[in-house]
Image (cartoon, rainbow, N blue to C red; front, top):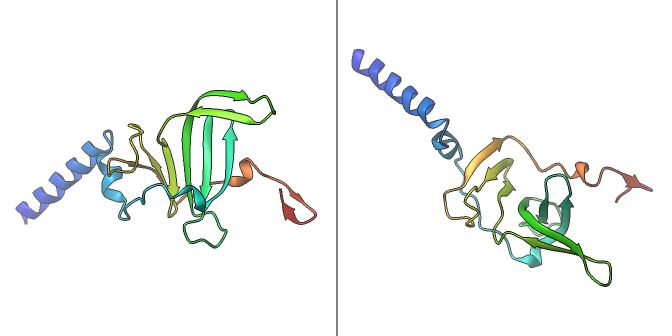
Length: 139
């Protein structure tokens, strides 16, 4: 009984010690984050002026529903001679949303297993960027 109790306390210490450095978040995520999809599956792109993030929305299933999202840090923002936005972003995303989990990649080195669970049981909230409907159609 005492050895079993010690094992429980040891496990608890590992879990609590891991909270600060991301070990717990790595242990919680049971699903492996897929690599960033091909641009052909991209549904839309958004720019978050507040957070300075370039957000790409994908449909991995190919059914037109957003099921994978990436966010890259924008280093510079400008307008082309034709008025189109031009973004200079980091090469790899800092955030991913997939399978009801928001992931953080502080190294911004692509999906390679060192990503951390930032928040579970969450989905990307597109209503923050496109909150309205016009004639029953999303804008």
